[in-house]
Amino acid sequence: AQKITQTQPGMFVQEKEAVTLDCTYDTSDPSYGLFWYKQPSSGEMIFLIYQGSYDQQNATEGRYSLNFQKARKSANLVISASQLGDSAMYFCAMRERGSQGNLIFGKGTKLSVKP
Amino acid sequence: DTGVSQDPRHKITKRGQNVTFRCDPISEHNRLYWYRQTLGQGPEFLTYFQNEAQLEKSRLLSDRFSAERPKGSFSTLEIQRTEQGDSAMYLCASSLASGPSYEQYFGPGTRLTVT
Image 1 (cartoon, helix red, strand yellow):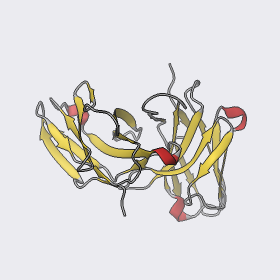
Image 2 (spheres, one colour; image 1 turned 90 degrees about the horizontal axis):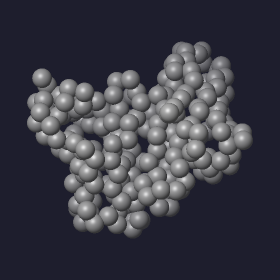
Image 3 (cartoon, chains in turn orange, brown; image 1 turned 90 degrees about the vertical axis):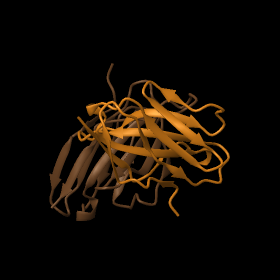
């Protein structure tokens, strides 16, 4: 079974609007971390935001926020005020406590921002 | 301030040849990870070092693959007797052992094409 599911292969958003990228996860480990990474066409993975399983509040980093719904096992990324430079692949990833740190990635969502 | 660097950025080789990739992590990071990413997929974990010790290997890492991190600094990933299925992007990441989020910082990757 997939541990990280990203159901949107591609998304379009108008510049300056907000967009939500979906991510659901599956784990029996009570302690885990959830990450979002951005991968532009150049290939480098850029860390965006982190949410710990015990964090009480949703994580925010500038224009990025994470809508964490623990009971539903979802960790959606919200990008506000989209910019043309946000066009990229976005990956949701999970680190389980028992994994010693390696990340499990979803298949990604390709975001295209329209001018 | 230098990030994670990888060399070479691109490698084309013929089936059956050996190839070696290098990764230089962020200097103060003692954890180093190797991932493989094929087209349309998220990165998949291959192996992980803490300092010079290789602590975890994925079952994706066949006997033809070997990784080292002498002196706990740079790391090399060698693929012997390459096969066409080895064609992929090989990503290196590093992180601190401590910290609430253990975010991993990725290099630009080495794209391997086996002909």
